[in-house]
Amino acid sequence: AYLEEAGASGRGDADVWAAALAQEVHFFLSALPEHDTTPGRLADILTAMHAELWRRDRDAGDQADAQRAALLNLAGVCLSHVGSKDKVSASLEFLLGHSSDHLSDIGVRRAFARALGTVAGRHFELVLGELGRAAKTDAATRRTGSFAQSLFGKSSAAQQAECLRASLALALGFCAVHAPSQE
Image (cartoon, rainbow, N blue to C red; front, side, top):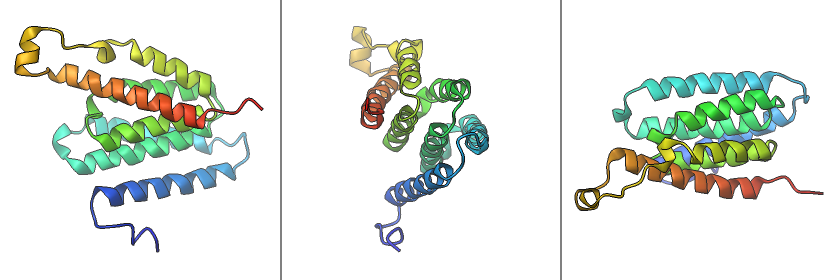
């Protein structure tokens, strides 16, 4: 009932539903035995769905961004239950490699960072390594440095780089929140 009363229809509703779905998937996957392959298969399905969304035209609008955010939340939950570091690494490389041009929406950026933080709860060192590699890519290191760019505005590549750097910084924060304790 509380989901129906969460507020007026719009982006907030999509965020609430995506978070509720991610929480239910987490509860389901937590009940599975450690060696179960269901989380890995779900991660494969979500990766295929991501690939389809990335192929779609960017002009799809808010609905495509809401779908991306929900898929990123679910991917993070599923990957946090996958035991194979190779599978997690491959999925993270895909997500990081196909995200830089879709992070202009704050909801997608937050979902991207939250997903990486969720995965870091189980694969902390792996996620930090992937974030370090992503921060060194050309997509993240583009800068606006010329006088003409400061007068006429930033290029789309420079704006995408800023969004990617902001997402990586936010992901580090979520990684810190979800970091495993040293007990």
